[in-house]
Image (cartoon, rainbow, N blue to C red; front, side):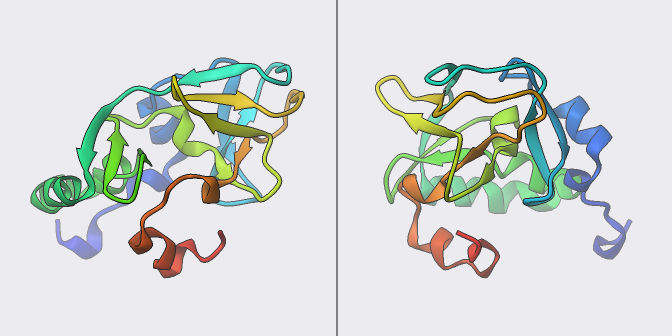
Length: 157
């Protein structure tokens, strides 16, 4: 199969639902009016509720990019799925996870209903969330790298 024939698995909702780790209770991945797929509440959530405790491996951005470059061509249909979930701890270091979790389907909003808090690193609701509401977070509050912020695909921030 040539590169032009490779199907991006991240655009297949059934694949995404089946392959994503179910790390946030009372949620489901669905089509979003904000951006692609989003994470939606299937049950009510209270303000200040902890939804997710972050885990992963601390890796330099430089090493992460080296790993991505080495592996990406070998896993073409899945490269956008595997190399997307991380959190910037600072401008040189990432917290990365081996597999996608539901957290990665929380879309950006400048008026979010969740946020990341630290020590321990966790995702917390900022307000009550009703069934059917999309979970959102303000990506700008993470310590994003200059490369991330200047990426033309990220201009929605």
